[in-house]
Length: 637
Image 1 (cartoon, rainbow, N blue to C red):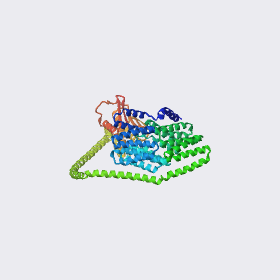
Image 2 (cartoon, rainbow, N blue to C red; image 1 turned 180 degrees about the vertical axis):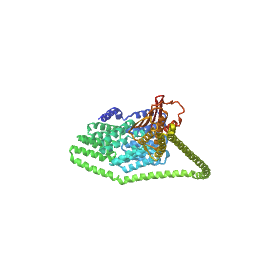
Image 3 (cartoon, rainbow, N blue to C red; image 1 turned 90 degrees about the horizontal axis):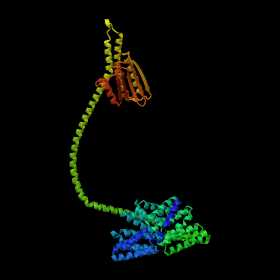
Image 4 (cartoon, rainbow, N blue to C red; image 1 turned 90 degrees about the vertical axis):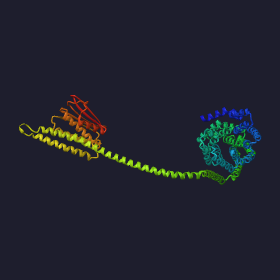
């Protein structure tokens, strides 16, 4: 309803402009025409006014066309003469003198086809001739004109005339009651260009699409496109397209059961048609208004309106419109209950349609489409031949240049290959040196790792054995058996350490619980040599994650080194070990000994190896020590 009220308000606001046939654009052009000082200037403004023919009354257009023809004859310019005759032919069309308009078109078109600068008026005259043919019920000739215009427009990349030609083809199919074909061509026209200026001049595309959608019963789509058509026609001040759109808008209102709102736009459109003057569209509007009266119980008005349209169509030989007008008349006879005249009119409609379709068979229309396609292919072939001729002009020179270029390229390529061979040999030599260096570095890294393992494990047990030897001999030459046992145990631990290294290297992955068990075994064995220490073991493993062999071995060695340092250097009597595995893995070894200064620079190989192992695996090794409160070593991964 808001859309309907908006359209009615716009009609009321524009009413003074519409009934006079005057627009702002025309007013400005007339002012410029009045100020022109030369024939050339005046002629250009007359042509510009002629382009507003859709918004001019017939008498006004004919007056300006006559003046333009007089100036063109005076200037003796054939292009100007063609333009002035084009606007005169539009006058003949508006007055229903279609044969005279056709003669003007046929007079100029062959001549303009031979003139390089005659493309613009040629396209205009072909489009006008197509319009005359369609209005004269000669659809075959009208379609042929549209295809000719399309071929010329495509050849010259003229987007606007491509849109006009495609719209004309769609119009033919719509008049021939083939809405699907018509809709296809209207959409082709709409999608030909994205230029808003071209779309503003082509409101009839959108109004035609809306008309087809009404026939297909798609009223929402029809309303969408007619709103666009009305908006474009108003912006372009095209009263002819606007009146078309108003008629279609009225049809939508009727189809939506809002007929009480439809008579106003219909009457307005007819008044506008009569003011601008074009019999073809006047009778179209009269047939539509007559249908409205038939459907709304006003048959007397409908019969009068239909007969008025039939008289005008007969007077101006608009045979294509007679079936529509007689259909409207028949509907009104039916509404009035006059069944005799209703039947007579239906018979008349059949006769009229037979005469229309007799000269416009589908076979002939298909032949025209084929002719257009063939012409299009011929144009492509002609363009290709032109391209070949242009290429032949430089072909031989190019061949000579290519010949010498090949010789020079061969020489350069040979030199390039030699250089590349030397570069490749250098690269291979460098790769060989890099590989040897990588092997050397790997060997050195492995050597250092084995050295660290020997120190961290075998060294600890060797120290324990040395301490046991010092205690071996008792006073009076006696032998302490327990010391011998301790020596044996430490020797066993050396072998155990070697087994641990082999165990780790033979595994693909090792669980954290397995590392913890190995460390417990290590602690148990080493603690026997230091019975004065009390060891507390805390294990919180919620996530038994798998570790790589290198990862597991480095963790075990760091734990062993930290425990060994606590036993050997802390001078305490209690060690606490806490192993945690949740989101992270954490190992903490804490003693209650004397501690040491963390600022000291000489901590020995054991501490250095611990830091290297931690850094190599991305762990954080934290050592906290305060004298005399002991030492805490924490490893976090």
